[in-house]
Image (cartoon, rainbow over all chains, first blue to last red; front, top):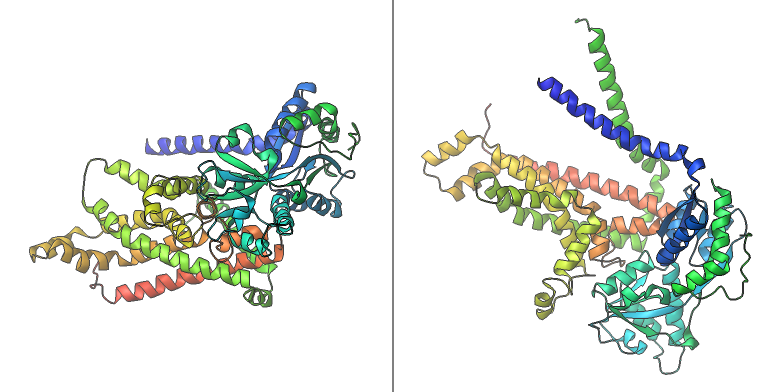
Length: 280
Length: 274
């Protein structure tokens, strides 16, 4: 009686294990038929690439776009460690170069979007930040992305440029960086801490301030004279298991329709690079 | 020598294979860490200010978190072991929750409770205290995650103290406080020390709740696990060395707490007869 019960329990546990165990395998076997294309993309691209993925699936029935978002540095490291993906979209050239240097690209990357930075503060503005000069005030809780994160590097660059402007104290950079209370691993981590009202200020991309985010934060624009422009390169990876759809997805991103979608998500056009559909 | 039936032999074989697979699963990653780092490298990394700061912060915060968990958890475990009351089951489930909660969720919950904009934020703010992004937040996150690792085994240890000793103490008119201090605590001590060691190890390894609730800043909130995570994106060698350092520290801490703590308590415990 007891034994039968135990056996039944073990049996169902085994069935459960089998169900979990086989799904990745089954999923692997179906890879070719289901035309899955795995896209590694910078965290700031989350909403825009969800829209682009859906658009690609709509235009190419049978294709399945699987999106994996993270800090560009995390994704580049994962690719270096042998992560399997078809497309990589980075928030800066540096991490794309890192991947290229390891011979992981199928073809050179193309810049498909640009972005600007902005300072955001919680709507309640607990730190009383009204001007960019206020970021240097002692006790301000500033959250930035870590230096390895593209958004973190761009933010430090912008702070350095602001320091050189007239009206900003000469030790602005040192004082602002002294106010950093946390270094986040993605730009979305920065936006989250500001949205929760825990940080007094953070530096994110202008594209991160979506209508829903804008309900909980105020943005302080960085003047053009100190602006830093982020470039987003995209490339098909050498190890792409589904090269045709990888090429197709990159083509869509660079196409007029793709650029229009990106603009709807507040990205700037790739400016100097004319879209070259079909060639990544 | 007993002869094994084919079924018995099969069972033995299965057990042997299971043990071998288990050891490979648990042991191989540790071996991989050890063979990756030369001993000289490990010592050299100790001189790195970031590693040193993270190690010091980790040790201090996890020891304080353990002290908090033990101090506050002992009475809870005692009451759970000796009293029946309404809602006890629900309380027990809640106490176990941090063990199964994804640490990031725990971190978010901590923010919503103790954060500046959280439930207690106003009250704490009135006292001039802002918890997030401070070392205090690291300790709170670690204590929250480590608490069930101490309370559950300690409660079980109190519950398994032989009732006859307590009855004997009672017939000698020992007060409850006296019975607790002189009978229960010494008898349960080895298990309590082991539970404290587990809680400490859990605090030392805490990552998700810390990075969510306390943020990540070298010297203030960047503990060893956070430093390893960040180094993974920069200097892989440093990440491996720090991981090994963390393993060595954890093993040392567990050994020290167990042997030291048991020695301390065992000398005061009454002789046990079986």
